[in-house]
Image (cartoon, rainbow, N blue to C red; front, top):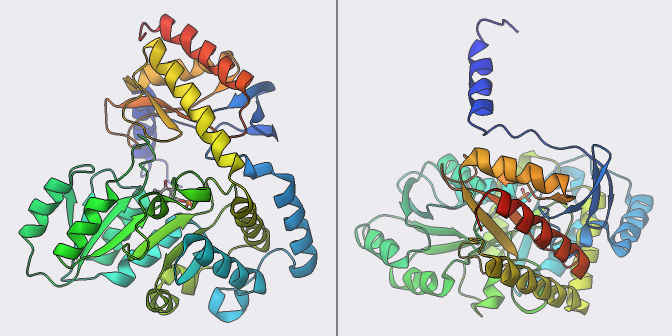
Length: 393
Ligand SMILES: *Cc1c(COP(=O)(O)O)cnc(C)c1O
């Protein structure tokens, strides 16, 4: 690589480091439940999306081993050529039952599911109404579609209606929102969006990535939580969070799913989910269907942690879920704060721009059913000590 032509990269990286926005990944050397080892130090993990502790569940491991013996490791093809095994169709059937929809189509990830779906549904001449804090994969899906994009204020259905009124005559209209917002832990006002969808004849799409395994009966997600079955046209989901695996899906009508098998580019041109991931997801759903004990534990842990953080005086924003943003403002401060937590055995990474807006840096804690009371107490003590050092409480 010609060093002169790419010297701008060095400059940009240096700037990120100066502004405290450079975030290299930490390497995990070992994992056991919520305990991880980084740089030889044992830590409690407070920033993974492993809401239910399924990421190293014995039952999932066993299902994966069995499936690999039977089907091998990789599908070695896209779904339409020879990448569809019985495991894939079993998973799709099971997911459709779980989400109480007609049909489901799986993708390699939630990101891929959004990229595949939005451009298949809207295009030039159409208009998308997108929450200003939607996930990057929704934003990219919208851009790929070539439809006009109108952003509405975060969760603001009044602003959305104002914008819908101005567009009465455009062709297809898509309203798209995260279900649970991953950086703030607040929940989209989905019933209001359903009303607007009906009033203005729109298509409604919700990305339930952080709602699955967390909200609604047995963790069925946001549609179940608000009891809106049959009223949301497109649900995108991920199995990379509460399910503890990796994979994405779209849930909806048979017609929608059939269309995506013909027009979803990530379905047509990228290999199918691996055998291991597919088998693990299938097992995760079986576990959730059978019992809601993990979900109960998750919410007990969440309430305990949040109550105590608030009593201590931390600003944890408007979270309604196990996502707990500990708001600190300045990115450098958040990164230093995280470092001191690390020294106290608590792994909770700081998050700054561009993942959150400038000046809104935070430590994002995610509570898991796998945390014990003593893990939670240890974290609370660490937050108290470091919070006092930084004079934020
Ligand atoms: C995490 C997330 C995704 C991406 O899911 P992956 O399966 O990890 O690709 C998509 N949408 C939202 C809202 C998310 O939080």
